[in-house]
Each structure stands twice: as C-alpha cells, then as structure tokens.
Amino acid sequence: MNDHILLCITKDESIPDELLTKNVFVRTTLKSAINEIMHKSLNKIIISEAFFKKYSLVIQLIANVIYEQPVECYMISENSYYTFSDVTIIKIENLKNIIQKKEKKKNISYSDEKTNIFLYNIIKLAITNNIYHLFQIYKDDFDSTIIKLLDILEKIFLPVNLLLVIKQDYEYKAFISNNSNNLCCNLLKIISSHNNLNQDNIIIYRENNSDAVKIPKTDLKNKLFKLNDDIYYLIQFDEDPPFDEKLLEFAITYSNLLISFLLSQKSRQQEIVSDYLTKIYNRKFFDETLKYTIKSSKRHKTPYSLISFDIDNFKKINDNFGHDKGDTVLIELSNIVKSNLRQSDIFARIGGEEFAIILPQTNFKGASILAEKIREHVENHHFSFNKEYTVTISLGLISIEEDFDVDFNTLYKLVDNALYQAKKEGKNRVVAQRL
Image (cartoon, rainbow, N blue to C red; front, top):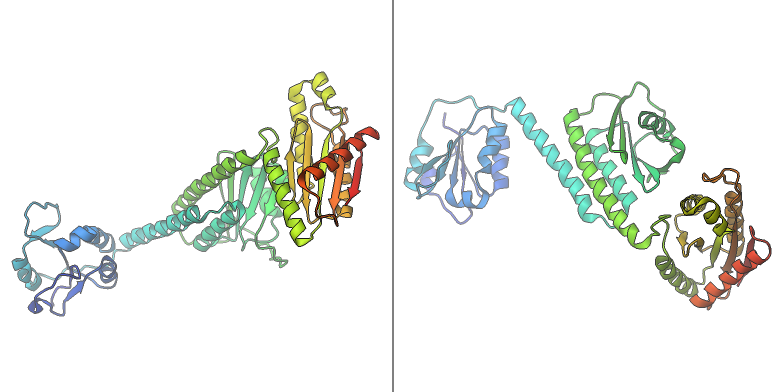
C-alpha cells in the first residue's frame, strides 16, 4: 500500500503531473494542511521552501501532537544551509524519489494522550481569545463585561451555579451567571463564610432577572477561588466538570487578568470625576451633568429636581473630635445617602461639608419624600466616631416641573437660598420649592 503524503506548496507553485498520484494530497494553505492531518493518517509531510517561509514548520509540530509517532518531514530547497534535527532537506529533482519510495507501512494512528493535549491547548486558546475579545470591546460598562465573562465560563465548564464577588471601592458586588439558580442566598452564604465577608454588605447584580425559580440541587461540589481580598469565585458542579481542574484554574487566572484590567480602568476613570475622600462625584462632574440635565429637560419637557445639603455644626465636630473624625463623618454620610439613591441619580461633594444631588425625571412629590428620608436616616445613624453624638443635615430642594427656562446659575442660587432657609428655621429640616 502506498504511503499517504501531504505536499504543502504555495498557490504560485506547480508540481509535475506525474507526481500527483492518488496518495499525494496537495494543500496550499496552513488551514487546509491542518485539516488533512486531522482527517487522514499521513506517513510523510513534504513542504516547499516558499510554503515554509510563509507558514514556518508549525505544520510538522501539529502533526507530532496529533499522531502517536513523528511523521517523516521533508523540505524542498535548493539551499543547503537549512538545518533541522528531524527535517530532511531535499532538492526538487529528488521529490519524485521521495514520493514514489515505498517503505514498510507504519501504524501511524491518533494518540489519545496527544490528542487530549491538542484538544486541551485548543480549549485554552478558545478561553484566551474569548476573554481577550472582552479586553478589546470594553466600553466603560463594567457590569455588562463581567456578565459576558461569566457567560464564557458557563459555556466551557457547565456549572450548576457560578458566583463572582468583586470588591469595588468600599463595597462588594456579587455577579451571578445567567444560568445559575435564582435562589442565590445560599451561594452568598457559602462564599461569605469561607472568606469572612459580611453578606449584608454585598450588592447582588444579575443581568437575567427572570422570576422563574429553579429547585436548588443538593450534594453539589464547590470550587472556591480567591485573588487577594478583591476577587472571589464560587463555582458549583453536580458532577465532574467536562474538563480537568487545571483548565479551570487556567480560565480563572486569565479571568483575573481581565477583572484587574477592568478595575484599573474603572479606578482611573473614577479618579477623574470623583471626590478623593468620599469617592462620590466631584464638583466639576456634577456641574457638567447639571448643565446637561437642564438642557435635556428643557428639550423634552421632563421634570427634574436638585437637592443641596450640608452637615449642621460640622465645625464643632472637627474642633471637638479632630479633623480625622470629621473625615469619617463625611465618608459615612456619603454611604448613607448613596444607599438611598437610584443608579441614575448624581450625588456629589461640592464643598467641604456641602453635598448636592441631581434627581433626573423626578417631580416635587418624589423628591420631597426622598429628601426627608435621607434626613431621617442621617439623624438616626450612629456614627462610628461617637455613638452618642447626633449628626444632622439641612436640605434645600428645588423641583422643576414647569419653568424649564431656568438657567444653571439661577438654579444654583435658588437651591442655595432654600438651604439657607432650612438653616435659618432651625436646621435638621428640608425646605422645598416647586418651579
């Protein structure tokens, strides 16, 4: 029986017709050559110098991975200065002899072990390429990018549940994959207990908000991974995953590179628009957003509200307890207010102890309820610097429902006047006005 021979040449080269026998498979691209290796049991690979210069000798290395024993490899070249330990250099006139030479048939077959190695590397390549794609398409949408990452991990490893907890600033956010069990309280309990996290301080984010609740499975196998104190994974399987743990660890390692990159990008962007102490928005970003809100509301005739407030008797806190305790109050206060706001609301520190909030598409009634709610939460909060000391705030509120022609400077003056009136009337209160 004749040998099966793969002859690799470029499209610009030609081979004498007498050499093109049934056992010679001519291919002109690396992709088509690999396809022959995958689907035929080859005895010899012959590569032209032009094909070598275009695609290198990687085709031989791939064949060595797939087959149980090395395949005879030849390179057609008129130059004798090429030297490879397992590649024989031949001239074009010797090609006929190599093709027609019959040798004792070797039992060349696929090696399960090498095929598995090849498959393992292909899967690693799929993991890296898909995750790298997320690097390339990242458009400042951190949460959506993380969900896409979980989607990749789900497709490959088929977990029952997949939970990723990431520390951002002073809070933790738990991302739950779309196909995980909707009863996520048990997942948070597991990951919190293993990593000493306060479950109450973890915000849950899920892209798929389906009301369908799956029946929780029992006897699940937990895989827990941790990077420093910032990134935590909980992956649950009801049976062994389709690939070994080394591949899972590789995927987690590469995922961590992406997450670290996203966090650094987010941190860099936040530094530009954030207050250095409280990590909420700064005055510059707030003013730019307010100007945009005024313009947009005027065009679409949609209501919005502006709240301005400051801490009552803040100078006494600094004088009696120290400026470091004053900073603590500012940070705790910011967290209290943030916890009562929507994602669309813009909250900023605009001065020492002065803050402001833009409430898009919010009328007088809704804004008044929120302002009073914030005032009460601050008054009832036990601040860490002194549990017995009551911190209060005074708030001014302006709601625009009809007078959409009000300009930036006028709006600021009106809300400052409302705040001043709240101070004048005894502090720890809301003074509101509708326009």
